[in-house]
Length: 192
Image: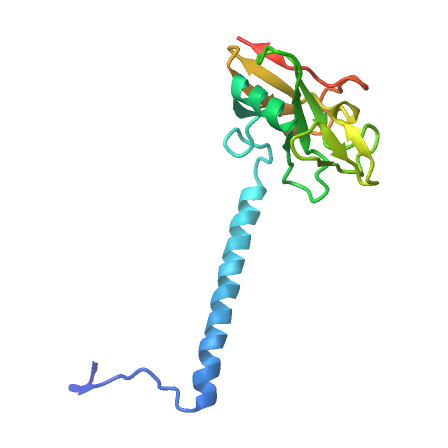
């Protein structure tokens, strides 16, 4: 209610009288709301991406903790090499396969890409609980026939107890990564 020339005038919210108006106005209002919400979200994303594009440790850790070396070595012994899928692309060209050789859980870790050597366009599938993979042509290959990483991606054993993957090469600017030796996969290094 409001006052007009000393008298009280009631103000009413306009009523939608026709069935068409009652059906269309809420739908148009909802569409307008989601358009505005999308534009605000896009503006926030554009603002955030316009600044420093370097990944931070919070969003893109340079080391992925895999847990206890003893537990992971046991997992490899019982279930075969560990396939670590890469979620950034649909091709999975950075999917990794972690393998362990030997009796010492702190030693013998090997890393491969999940495609045959020299064929990055041919992702592999693992045959459950084995070290055998099937490539895109249906050919079975051993884990040792997978491609070694060309970037300086490697398994790291810290204090003889915890296994990490050093992923700095994936988060480094283009051209700043070191190349691995062709034909051999990076072995685990030990950090004190």
